[in-house]
Length: 206
Image (cartoon, rainbow, N blue to C red; front, side, top):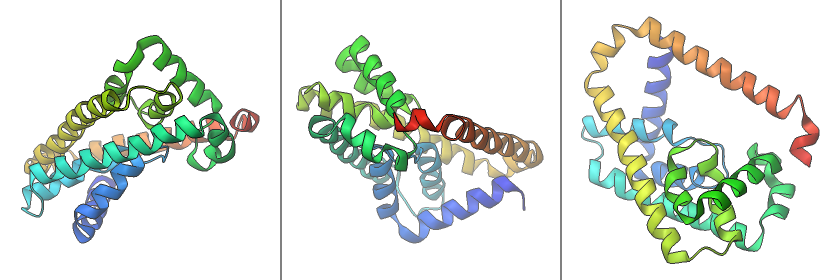
């Protein structure tokens, strides 16, 4: 069994055994400051649609509601905590002031629509709700943009997982190359983490 097949099987089994609750909790965390990528959750929920364990409608509803809740929690962190929260707890979530400063600048440049756009941008989507709260963005507009952006993104990833699982045998014909790609990505992620959080530890504390 290759790396790709092992990871896919393990994650799918975990979500299968815990049901929608794991999708709900993980997507709340994904929409906050926790380093949990939606790419590691939603495609495997799509796998379970193929087996009949989940339905497409339920997956999108559960994941999008979770994204809204997680985003609202971050919104209020920004409104009542903001930078002090990042200073105190950011290191536990692998984020720092540089991340927040970049996100705040992005929000300031593009305005409220950033909440929708950033659902498709890694790292930034975990933090963008904080400057929205700091800027006291209209809460109803925030929820609408979050719902649209999260709904589209979650549906896209779910469909990708659904399509991938339906064509799993064809994909596994190229398992060796897929495994190499996955390993390269894992190594690159590890190197990025070391370079970013260990080479310049002072920046993470600033």
